[in-house]
Length: 207
Image 1 (cartoon, one colour):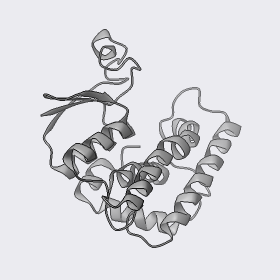
Image 2 (cartoon, rainbow, N blue to C red):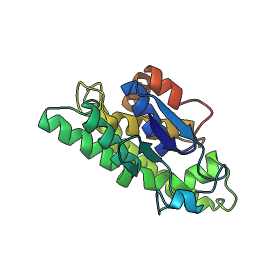
Image 3 (cartoon, rainbow, N blue to C red):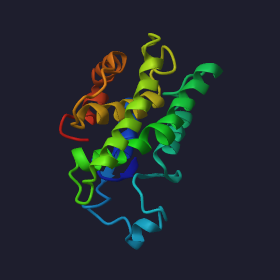
């Protein structure tokens, strides 16, 4: 039995939960992360000194943090959710890393301002800058998906699709005007939400 520490409003926690559901794994989840439970408590810091969710604790296994590292660990130990063919494997890991390093950072200000209504995120110039950077990255994803493959690394669903689909969900659910038309991304989003676990972890009321 795996313990997952983290709140479900975290996109990174939902990555792990989606993967576990795809694998048919049993797990217990505990609420951690503000505003539910402060991850700076000593109990949590002993597990992850960065005070970030998720953390996973596997019986007779490691304690891990960093969502993409957890995804790779699950795929490697369960022999699933990653392609075996080297080129497809490289593509999957490429897009998994791109999601974290290129796609995620630009949206932060816009999501806080427009979706979460976080106090202090009301600078219109910074909102516009955030949306512009986000849109440029989404256009890169649109170009890749327009090549017609059902999944980001080819014919097989992988952990990269989990990470990207959750990011795409955030794009569609964050309200702002003049959102770019991305038909291939929209079709991909529909395919990912057609999966049972995808529908569960990309609900309409969670950014």
